[in-house]
Each structure stands twice: as C-alpha cells, then as structure tokens.
Length: 457
Image (cartoon, rainbow, N blue to C red; front, side, top):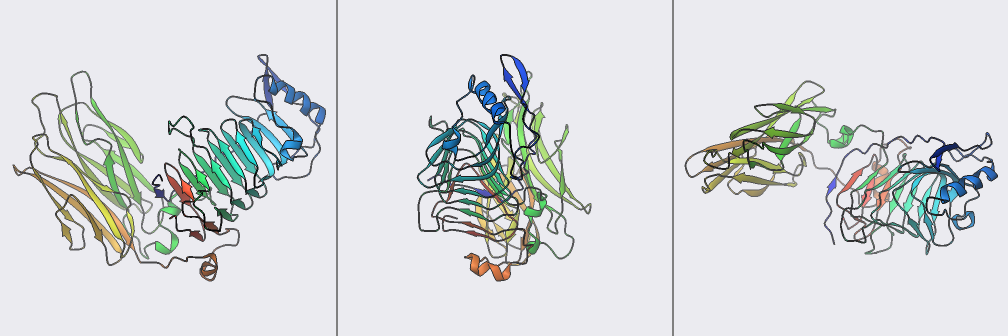
C-alpha cells in the first residue's frame, strides 16, 4: 500500500464558465435551443431536442460517441460546447443502469448517481458540477485522468473511484471532491480494505472551497488567545551545488508558515545576491561561496518570523565553501502539546569532514542526533535552532519556529462529535471509513466542521 501524506490546505474551486460553441470542419457553429434549458441549480426545463440531436452528430464526428439517454438514465443530455481541451454538457441527471463510457468534458448536472454493480468509465479529464446530491455506489474509473466532483448537496462515495495509470507511469491526474457545505461519506461503513479513492495523483477533499486558506492552517480552537508572531520553516530542494562560468547553480525554495492567532501571511526571500517573493520560489546563485538564505514571513499584524537555510556552492574545482551547508526539515509548524515533532537535519560538508549536530528547541531541551523527535509539553511559540559544526570548527546555524497549541479531544464517531459541534448548520459532517480509504500521491483534507476518520488514518 502506498503511504499517503496528509496536509490541511485550502483548495479553491475554479469557476466554470461555458461558451456555447462547437467546432466542426474548422467552423464555429452556435447551438440554438429554446429559451428554457437546464441550469446549474437543477431546475426543470425544456430544450429543443432536434437541435440537441444535430449537435450530438457534429460532436460525434470527431470525438467518442456519447452514451444514449437510456444508458445514462437521463431525460435530458445536451452537449453545449466542444472546445479544447474540454467540452461542456448539461443534463438533469446521470443515473446509468448499465456500464457506460463518458466523453471527457465538463458536466453540469442536477444529480449524479452510479448504482452498485455499474461502472462508469471516463474517456479523459472530467469535471462534474452537481446542484444536488452525488451517490457513487458503483465504480467511477478513468485511465490516468483528472477527476473533479463538486456538489452543492451531499456526496456519498461508498463505491470506488479509481483513476490510476494502467501504463504504470504513476503520472496520473488529481482527484478533487468538494461539497458546498454538504455532508460527505467516503468508503463503506462496514469493515473493508477496498479504498474509496485510488489515484496516482493528489487527492483533495473540502466542504469550504471559498474559505481562505489560512483558516485551515490554525483552526479556531487551536489559535493563540493573544497576538503572536507567525511561525515558519524554509527548505531547498538542493543545499549544495556547482556554479560554472557558463552555468549558474539554481534550486527551488519552499516555505511552510502560519499565524498562531489566525490570519494571512506573506513571504519574502533574501538570497544575498538577489531576492524573491511567494511561498515557493526559484533562486539562481551564479558564484561559489556560502550563502545564508533568509525567509521572512509577515502576518496581518506586521509581526515577522525568520527562517534560515545555508547553501553551499563550489566552482567545480578549487573554490570550496568552508562552512557546512545545512537546513532544518520539519513536516509541520503547528504542533499539539504532548505530540512528538519529528525533526531532521540535512547537511553537507565540501571537505567531507565529520559533522556534529546540536538542536535547541527553545524550551530548554537539546539534542545531538541529526534526526530526532521532540515533544513540547506546554503551548506557546518556540524557536528551533540547528547548529552544524565540522571537525575544523566551522559552524553553520539554521533556524525555524513552531507553534504549540493545547491538546484537544478528537471524537471517534459522529454521534460523539455532535454534542461538541458549535458550527453553522450549513456545514455538514464528514465520515471517512475503511482500513485504507484514500490512496494517492498526497491526501489533502480541508473541512469546516466535524470529520471522523476511520482506522486507515
């Protein structure tokens, strides 16, 4: 089983804008229909079915044949657009009673239902925008294709969604599942080892696509009661490299940061010879030497956090940096009191000297191993410092900061959670069942309200 990593991030739904055009024989033709048609809200409508049949014939000349209305279980299925790369379709519902294959595109539906023992195969990248409920008791599959399901109602995936690559490349499309405040159920409530979602890409699940990302960085009950500076850590894809007269050394930098009392943050990088902005950025270092790279994170109160990385660059010959290159590696900067935090030191010495390590966790505790864990007993903000020293006495110091919040009680069932829930009724609960409910390159869960995770988490 592939190990998944879980991050709590905000995912923003892209707005869907449909243009009513098709391409045929190099000419754009407009679709003419009656003034009434199916809307994204699933209203009852009437459509010029003759125009729809003509449109289907045009699309079918250069694209996979669309399933019949009987196969789809839909009383209305009108392709509105053919464009590159996705066409758009509108239907009251998709409710097939037999296996079908759908052409790639954007589907605006009133409801989506895939019964048990029915398989729906996607012919390419597909997005479903559903004004009502989504129920997938059967199987939704696609070969290496991206899949988006955005529902304004409840989303129940007790069957399976599988978009792995049959060629074994592992370069699959992402899976995005979202509800506009509706309830979510993934996996069969009965014990099962069958994952609800299996993907070679990333999996994103949310019920609050329009909520700012920082709301998920530090949840409301975790936030500091008084303003604190942000916390942050910085890392580089490569901390040591070579700069030649014809080729500079370049590496990607990434930041992880949050405001303990809640709010957005901004990022600024100082590479010595140049600077950069944004959470992730590329730095080009044309000359040999030792470069302390500084990340500065600023919150909405104007308070700052700094994190440092030491980069080493040689010239491929005799110019070797004396000090070790080093960085702190943290998988998170928000920690629960009493929960171990894994810390790792990445270091390199150009002279191949033996290196010594010293961690200072800011609460009086220290460690001397390159990779270790530390448990913070009390809530607060802590500066974490790593010092790497070679046998010649050359030392490098790198820094990060973490926020520790008070321990919280996590409910194990929806019934346990309901008395504690102090949230607007528009945010439904979520239950993710099964021993291995989600398998993907990354699993990202952003949820407002109660989410009960099965034993697979």
